[in-house]
Length: 252
Image 1 (cartoon, rainbow, N blue to C red):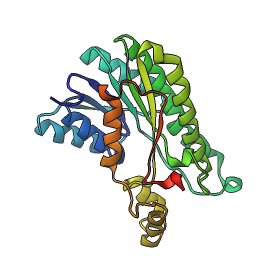
Image 2 (tube, rainbow, N blue to C red):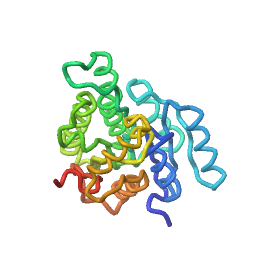
Image 3 (cartoon, rainbow, N blue to C red):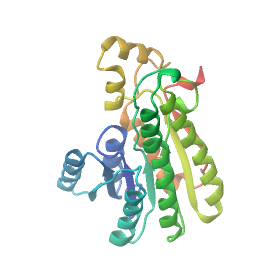
């Protein structure tokens, strides 16, 4: 029997990177997965792949920065499956790279809208849905850039710091009602985001790798494994936790 057998999970940013790894793992562990993303082709292909393997995954087009889309994800879980047990607020973008004085307001607003407002909206509607079933587990994806300074990406860093504080606040607000809220802070992970960040430059990638005390980048599956644990009943006494998944990055 799988870790999430009988549970219904929504995962945002599901078409690639950490989100895709989480969709595959959650489905393999028995969950009905609603995979949400704006990348329709990749999302539909993922759902089809899992169907061939006998798993239940439904792709949902969703822009997490829009409240109507956030509400629709939770409503679909309730209307189609009668419950929402796990929500992984994973969707995020890195935005443009520039020091604070050179950063544009357009980039600031776009990054905050997706990375921070998107998590807030996921929490708002996810919590409402979970309260109807007596509780559930929400996992928010932040970053080590929310824990330490990260020059050149002020909007990204601010958004991830905000996610951490949203996590703590919601965890305290709903602990007594059975909704757990925890936060992951990945380090440098082998994802399309890191590829864009380094512009596929081997030297830039090598510099990032040197920041990791373990001497390598993380894998999406390693982050997904922790999300699985936090979504399962094995983590029933854990809420409000901010957990680095970073190869020792913030231990320096």
